[in-house]
Amino acid sequence: MKLTVVGCSGSLSGPESPASSYLVQAPYQDRVFSLLMDCGPGAMGALYRYIDPHEIDAIALSHLHADHCLDLCGYYVAARYSPNAPWPRRPVYAPASAAARLARAYEVTGTNSEVSDSGASLAEQFDWHTWQPTQQIGPFLVRAVLVAHPVEAYGIRVEEGRPGGGTMVYSGDTGPSEDLVQFAGGVDLLLVESAFLDGPDNPPGMHLSGAQAAAIGQAAGVGAVVITHIPPWHEPQRVLAEAVPHFDGPVSLATPGASWEISSY
Picture 1 (cartoon, one colour):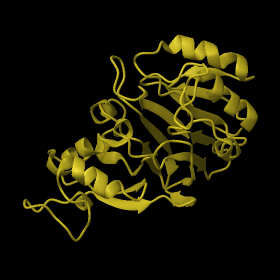
Picture 2 (picture 1 turned 90 degrees about the vertical axis):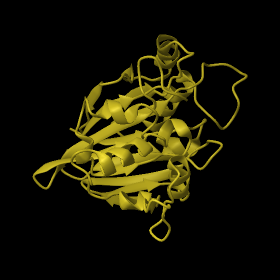
Picture 3 (picture 1 turned 180 degrees about the vertical axis):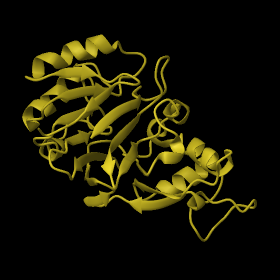
């Protein structure tokens, strides 16, 4: 399984990175299966550096804050109007209100039964699925768990089925969460948000500091921690420095284009 960072800026797109978006790929039926996790502002254009977006097989949205989902409107435009359109209709795994949320963003309706005056519907391109505790998505067994955020938000665990296939957890946006510790138990890589600096005044149930993110990895016994979702107003190296003392293994920063080959061997 390969993880590639498409965008990693927290809360909004940054001067050097799109907002949250991650590409997870693995062999499947004599080809490479591609799962896109989150699609924040700027992600759709950047995605062309790593894959023809026409080849995305499935999409997963951790939650519906703008910095994690709004470039799905750009995906819809490309899927409907680019030279090789229409693209195949793709499954989107997301919170229950995703179809309506994205339809409002693009000003078309998001169900099969309702269309705009132009006849357009997001359902032409997206097959909406509400998150279940477990779902099979191509070669991946994908699990979802509610995490600590002001809106319905999920951590996502991806397990590759083939022998030696890796395991990873993407935290999405979360505050400290014992459920996330249990959910991430023993995975090879934890991709974890760190939107806060360490300090006593951070609001609860919203985001993690680097120290808290690394501590989750330590408690969960993961193989490696990758820090992501740092907003443009924080210095990434400071977040990393806060994280390193709290995890015994490798800790690194997500950067656009960075990739990891994840294996259980």
